Length: 314
Ligand code: APR
Image 1: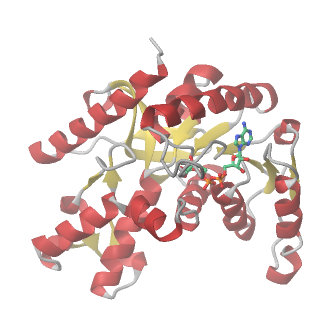
Image 2: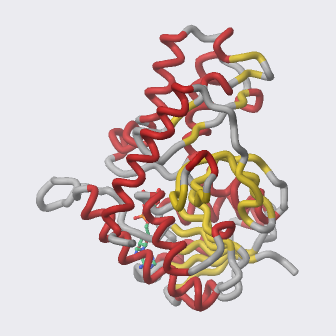
């Protein structure tokens, strides 16, 4: 039987994820969004591109949540992005955004539980790590089936800048970015290589520091240019997670995962290397971190905890 992927939220990231997935031909796709007929319209438009590109995925959309019925994977992008208020010109405070999207996530979780109780949830809505907590609590799903997308994007940005700087193929860059999704993310130059050659032999420290800083601020750089968040790269990071799950590839991707003792953390979503397969997070890989790397990860964990506190869960 063909796989079914539901895109819960058909805004920029949701629709673009569908676009990448359609080309991969790994599932039929359904788009759901509460806003007018946007999901139906984007789905039909994308479906009609199939004959030209040559993909056979079927794509449907609706403003009825029941369309996600029986999905194997649900990609959640529904929510309110961090956008300037058109009247006041102000960004919402972090806590306001947390509360707003928490309410959305409670509703999303209820629908997923109702229509796709066996699905694996790949969550993208920010603030990511906190929204993962809401999803886990509200669905009651086992931790393997609630996974946050952050590291796949952050790592892609990191690799892009390295490949661009060295003028080599992105395919030969290996590296990983851990931690929470935000300014405290933890790029690991000690674990970065170009076809196995340590990055520290190819780039001097100052250049590498620049790349790390640019990676940390990668989301903000796009917002500065567009006035709203990026979506091609976030969607691509999401699509490779879905691909690894559906094809049971068992790729090792940095994902926001719920820790129960790994790296000494308990009951906290944080970006760690995870093996993604047909059961979701099949394993969390524990790396040996230096004292400095460990301190950066702890700092990141503290930042995640401070956002999670706003949720008001015990
Ligand atoms: N149910 C279904 N859809 C909803 C709901 C809801 N309760 N609330 C909002 N949406 C939809 C909106 O109608 C919108 O189409 O979610 C969509 C969000 O899309 P965009 O506003 O285009 O935001 P996008 O850029 O896709 O980002 C989505 O991903 O990367 C993160 O920070 C980003 O949290 C944001 C999320």
